[in-house]
Image 1 (cartoon, rainbow, N blue to C red):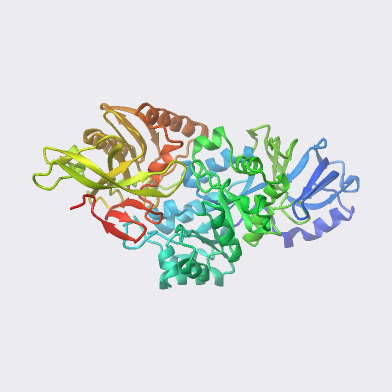
Image 2: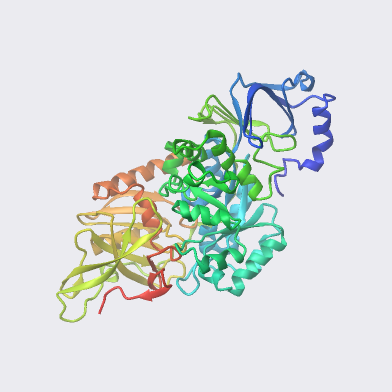
Length: 598
């Protein structure tokens, strides 16, 4: 059912040819614009775009021959006509929104194509969850292609997910109409070690002629990296420095450089192009993770392109990295990514290539946004009731569930502590001397407690440890059922009573994020679908997220987008320390380590 209302090229080729030849009228003509050609990196004034059946028939200096009495005319008025922007790697769930509401939020920012990996919901609802995301994606007025998640769990043996993805699941999904490839291969030790399941997933994807996504989070660019690339991943977005980008491109991968809500990895990597002068065709811009507040207040792919330009990138090169480079990577160069005949008529009108105001957005030949306002409808799927009932803690939590017992007679202990790094996904492995009171290890200074509460199978399990870097003070706790990638519940707090209150509150509302201080709830973002998403409009979710941010700040946290850091503390494939339902994980060695040193 891929785009039932949108015809494929073979179905409309005769009409496109006849319109281009001037023998038939176009449905729509965009008249008098400057054609930004991302194939040749040119801006060509005085061109018209003739559109038929949602596809471009021709781009010519004068489309009078293609204009009939019923042709809809869009006056470009000399403005730049650029291709709709493509996000090469992203997770819709990170916006706390369903695909429909995410599309509604980003369309006014000029994003008309997204390549999404729904591995968040795969961890909670398995293959069914992926199918639900896939189906709602295909209902939208813009292009949302789905990558079949590859790693649930992301690191086998290190965590327990709600569901597991198998090689058979991957093979089945490759036949679905909206599946474009395999999602990021996060199990990089497994890939480098020739794990049979990982290689089987890659093989199923390649047999289907589709693209394998990468996720190499190790700083080691030696033999492990070589082995990883040999396994088949075709791109990678985990680079953080220029050397990472260069290494990936030299090995024939696409280097995806990201600007998300908390990931600022463009400035440090784009210098491979702007200073080293390397060929930019193998560099792609993406967001990875953007929460609703960023989408509403700052933008989406338009924000990333502007940032790349601010970092010294030529505007036309930056546009290539967000259009044709992305389309080519996924084998869709004949469908999207440029304003050329046969492609989907996804066009942005803008008066400036450097500041990139998104003045009108046309998707498949129809105006879908104008002057920042959505003009299209983004249909919703009827989500099943069991997708809204996924928080199963087993028992109500009390302060005792969050106690960390010290060795008998100890007045202080040395703890292994997760150290948060602002604006980056990696953490630091720290050691801290912690005080003991009545046999229990207490929070101290900048170090507070973290707990992972099992919420998929109602086991009642709680894993306790310590985290530093949030700066929290007073009696508080914050809990979230967004906990990449296994999506149990993460609770961070300075007080065990507050931690229990926060955990129980999320069980009550069916998932989301909450913050308690001195026994009073300060903020709540309800995410009832899989404990990850809301089907409310982005502006409403963003307003609640903003209240959450203010509550975190009031508790002493000054980190940029600290919520994103909170949600990644269980991501057991990114070094150095993480927490899982099975214990404290040293991701440098993929081994469990004790919370307290003996």
